[in-house]
Length: 473
Image (cartoon, rainbow, N blue to C red; front, side, top):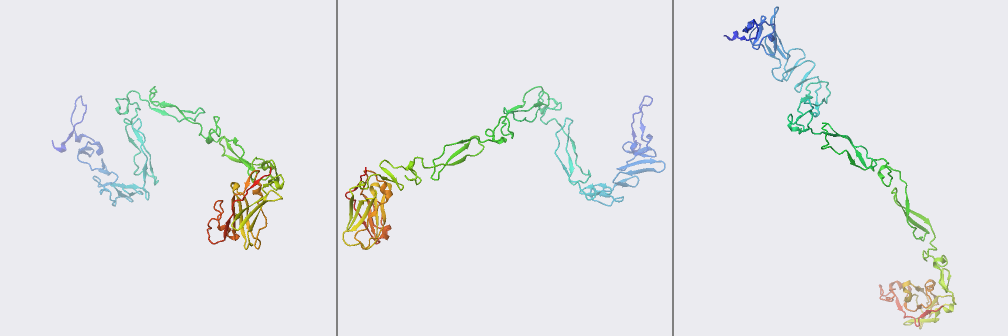
């Protein structure tokens, strides 16, 4: 049989038997009615190859005509791609048309970046992640055009097939046999828990957990209660106070606990420190007025005149101008009544005064008269620890053999008590008086080598002999 005599076997039930139907016996009005490898010619199928992308049919008026698909043109029988260069735009048939990547862009769209777009706008697609695979094996995502062109040109797919088997969760009716990878060894609970409740006053909070697979088991069920601390939740409740929970905005009422008052100061003030036991505030210091006279200590410049309570005189003494003086007669203060000490040609005399308890000193030359001033320093070593300097000052007896009588310091003299002695100490004379600072003044260093040799002369007196004794009873 020749190729043009090819036949098509058709199953036909004619009088209960099959027969062979020849190609030319098949009626048609278009190529679509003919089998593959045949075209419609004169209302019957005939051997032939139709033009690609063409839909041809036979009409009585015109005969065989072919319409080309979009992007193709032809001569009525054969069709040729208008954009045959596969992407390079060429002049195509039809007003306002352009070629793009082997396709045809209809006006007003234009070719841009290998796709047809509205003039001047190129979509910029941004897609989110794929959703979890559903039980019907689908997952979706959302794609948005960041340029807002209002076109779906080039838009990526927003849905795709997937397989929920393999997600590690036994759900969607899976079984061990249907999905071995999802741990379906019987019913596997899938626990889902709600949020924790507010912390209770008993410092507990709760939540509810349910099994999405309804396995009717508590295996692997998360805890539905836990410990917490209601202090710190920002609400003053559950009997909280500022002291027990400072962070929950509880009103704070200080409870002050104060220590004892300090001793009264010389400015007649005393202080104490108070601490807030609730912790509302830092500690504070309180001050109040007081009177240091009466605290039992003779200080702050008090005397027997200003504060007899603290500085009262002992028996046998009375207060006179702020000092305690013996109440006995003046002639009874010192025994013997006079004595002396020497240093070369100089004599230092001392005697008791007849008007009060003080002593008085006199310096004499054994011969001749004084020709310059001098500095006299008399400090009793017997009472050195109290700093008793009986006399310390400049004397100018120029032209005289003896000085006038020089009274002792009343305060220093007033500290002597019955039985005390005076007569051993630092007794010296420096002449001229201006050189006094160049000589040592220590109890054991008087008249030592001066730091500025050649400035004056220093005379050191011996101890008084006999010593004077405070004899007033």
